[in-house]
Length: 76
Length: 427
Image (cartoon, rainbow over all chains, first blue to last red; front, side, top):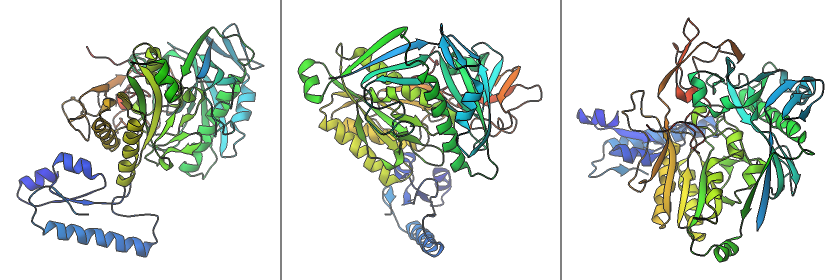
């Protein structure tokens, strides 16, 4: 899906836990996430802490989306 | 040197009887005694026992685990150390196994749980468990129990029953005895000079959420990659806690009888020096995947190995663990063969694995789990067909009005097993 959408001219940030697979399939902007069963959250955290974590991930993805990249890039 | 004698007690039939015993290859089972063992756990409300024999028109589903009964006759520890027996290092001395039979635990645990064992028809060809006399334990949970509490209840119930039945063989004379000998690192190098040093690297399913494996009772997701003597598994050092996608999870029976270990022993001292077994996990955090594969590669180097056989358990994100292990071990100069299976779509034309690398240049496949099969209606169902449509590999149309079932072979217990346990082969 990442490649299909980018082929249509729209940049994509792939947020995922297993970044090596994202690299293999050819995503250009990659944001690492928390864990496979809960990529964009962490049930071990208190709700307020988890909200901060989630917002931080989305903000990082938005920065990645606006960043010019030459090669496949992981935004740590 | 460490030595394990594995005695085979051949079981040709199972019957219910007033007393549990083994006579002339027939296992007689006291139903009430076995039920009492299952119901020791207050999380289990009721259980039913049934017997399924090869060739009978019987379907067992949903299957939780398959277990071969064994008994420790001589040597340290007992069967299923850290789980049923006390923690003690196993793999030495004398063990008897009830061959030709298994304890199968069944019943609902989660909505999409494994698996199907057909005792006849085309489905039977895909699961080696159709060739066994199976004592099936169908458990029913107490009301209101959570799935993650009930899963261990059924898991332990199966082990207790298997240990109880194995105990019946303690005083018997085995029909056949296999001997497995392993050496210390220096000892092996001295005794078998010139032979390539080979180990088995086994990846254990540890994604959590009822995809779990236990080593001496420890949840594998909480372990670091480590070394075992390959005979330890024959006493039940590794057990299954899986509930999902039956085709390529290792039931406890497969851990006890791991074909890779047995085949490497077959060549030990002839064409290879089978140095040891290395176990590693398949966790859901990227850092864990990186750490565990770093450790397997480090251990392979430390042991001065020439080659390894690497088996996966499950599919999807563990494909990354597989490729990480393969790349890093090959990078240490250790030749690597991987054993996996494929999710290549129903037509077999899609990419087989979620991850790939040029280092994975020697690959053995257990088959395409997406392959579709139509299972005929069978006369008897042990368990329930209620979950056939939601099982992994099934869909809302799987169970047809005429009683036939159309599913992917991933629904069949052991169909694409990644230790070579199944019957699939290439034309």
